Image 1 (tube, rainbow, N blue to C red):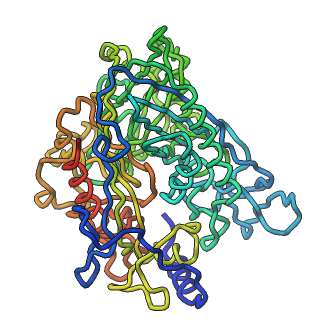
Image 2: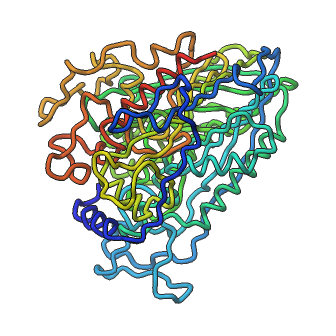
Image 3: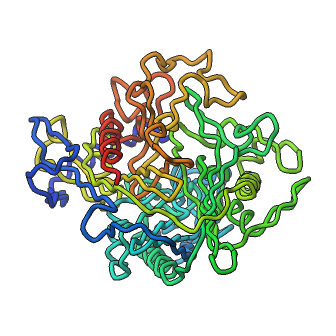
Length: 572
C-alpha cells in the first residue's frame, strides 16, 4: 500500500491549480425517462440517466435464433519498448530510489529516468527486460447476424474511454458488442497512470497506449476475419490439483470473510469441419501478482503458463496431459478482497512443496499457471458434448457513478489517471458533498449459450455473487473470520440471498468477469465498508479495510448493484 503523506500533498497540489482544464462534459442524454435506474444528485434530480442496450430487442439486433454459429481468434503481441533500464538497485527491492544510490541508463541524455513503469504494488518500479510477452487475444463470436468480440489483454486495467476509442476504430466491422477484459496483471506496463516515476507523475506512456489500442484493433480484425463454423463445449473443475487443499493450493483470500470461487470454467470452441480447437475461454479468479513486487521483468504472470499449458499440454510429476491447441483466452473473475497468492502454501504438480519466497517469483507464477492449466484441461476432458448452436444475448448498461473518494479526486484533477473524462461538477468550486465529480462506466449481462457472465469494470468481491457468509465457500485451510481479527465483519448484517449468481436463471455455467470495460478499483460490500474517520481514503480504517481506499466510495457498489439488477430484469 502507498503511504498516506503523498496523497495529502497531491490533493493540495491539484486543488491549487487555478487553470485546471477539466471540463464539465455533456452526458449526451435527455431528461426523458428511459425507464432506467438513474444517478440522483444532491437535490434529488436525475441529471445522468442510465442507458441500456438489449440484444435481441434493440433496433439492429436480429430477433431470429440462429441454427449455427461461428468463432474466430486473433493474437497480437503488445510489449512495451524498454530503452532506459535501471542498472543499479542497491537494496534489491525493485524500486528506483536514487537516494539509496540506484542508477539508470539515461539513453536519451535528458537527465530524467524515462522508464517503462510496471503497474501494481509500489512505485516507481521500472522494467528492465521482458520475460514473456504481453499479449492481446481476441475471441469473436457470430450467431446469425449478431457479432460479439471479447478482447483480452495482459494489463492491469483499462478505462472505458479507451474501450470507446477501440470501438470507434473497428466500427466498420459491424461488431454489435465489443468488450475489453484485462487480466489485472501486476507485472505489465502501467495503463492507468498511478505507478509512475513519482507519486504525482502519470506512469502510463501515451505512445504505448496508442500502440496497445492499435494491437487490440489488429487482433480484433484478425479474429473477425478468422470466423468459421464452430461448435462449443462447456466444462468446469475445481482449481488446485491437490487432494486436500483444493483451491487453497493456488489462491487465498486475504480479507475476512474468506469467501472464494474455487472453479475454473472453460468454454471450448471447435472447428465444426474438423473438430480442431479454435479457442478455449478460461475463467478463473486470482490476482496475477505471483511474480512479486521485486522483479523488474515484464511478464503476464501465471496467465502465460496457463495458456501455454492448455495449448501445448502439461507433463510434470505424474501428470501427462496433451494440449488442445488453438488459442487460449483468459478472463479474470471477481478478485476483490485480495484473492491472490497472499497466504498460499503451494504444492507443485511434482508433489514438492513450493517455499513461499519461490511462489512469489516468476518461477512460482509459472508453477501456479501450470497447475491451473491442468485444471482447465481436466475441465475440457469432462466437458459436455459439442453443441452446434450458441445463443448470444446481452444487456449492456452505461451508468453514472459519483466519485466520493478524495484521493481519486486528487488523481483525476492532477491527471495522474491519464486524461480520463469526468463530469457533473463545477471545477471552479471545491470538491465536496454536492459538488463531487462523476464518471461514466459500463456493466453487462451476457448469455453465451449455457454460460452466462456478468461483467464489471473493477474488482468486485466474490461474495457479491456467491454469498457464502455461512462458510459454504470457505476453503478448509482458513476460518471464515480469523479469531484475532481486530475489526471483524458483522456477518449478521451481511446481505441475504438471493445473490447475483442465484439470479442467473438457466445458467449452467455462471461467471463474473472483473476488470472488463473499465477500471474503478474495488467493489466492496456495503455492510462492511469502512473508511478512516480522520483521513478517509488515505489511511485504512481500523482493521482490514485497505480496499476502501481504492474504491469509488460507499455508494459505488450499491449503485452498481441497482444497475445490474435492472439489467437482469431487461434480459431478452
